[in-house]
Length: 350
Image (tube, rainbow, N blue to C red):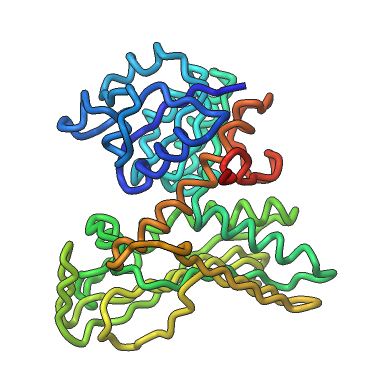
């Protein structure tokens, strides 16, 4: 069976979603929403950097709903709860990479609206991405060989200077003065989706959390950095470390950490792992490291070329979930535990 899919936006992640939908034998791309007026009317294949596919982008939501899609692949930078509820109430499933895993990061009221929209439309929403999302699943799988689990820590440790989105980087503090009084609040707001990841892992482990808290640390630039898409001046934030803790009492049982650096001169200069690291404290202790590397013959020459790989690994968990979500019979916010194992089914090279 082929499922009819509408792509929502053609930004960094959206372009990779378009390519994956077109390549997937179980999916048919029937429409696309574009924010930018200059993209309206353009062929979606061209917008994604592939050959024309005969589908034009539009900013008319009503027109997209008349296409009777089974699912929307929703890839804006941040979620719009009004839009999500409109789609879900119309009976359209949604898979998303837009800072949504369980909906806790949206706040209680917004999460309840999404759940109500799912009930009304008999629809489901699944949120993922690389981190949070797949990285949390890796943590749970790693802990599955232990007979005692004391703590699970999942760390993303990367050079983020190739992610050319000034809006995203500034939202978590990069480029602001190290003396800015609201740095922690920026990090807490900009990484709130990691709270979703904590709740998802706690649910999988069948534990009730007493609290979820965010902590933050910063590194300061020791000289000016011109990154092309933004500047980080000396004395401003060039490194961000955020950690979200799932507490049982005052014990941190789940810890999701990010270490992001931009530029080569900062204090303190944290060492990077250049990937995703899971550490399970328990019996036995388990240390799992996931590194993402380009394939053989990759022609990328710039750091930005390599960041395309980051867009792919963000998009694919949500794309691979579409057939399973469309076959789901229970409406609501769905997670990895609610769907069959997500694989690269249909995408094996031939």
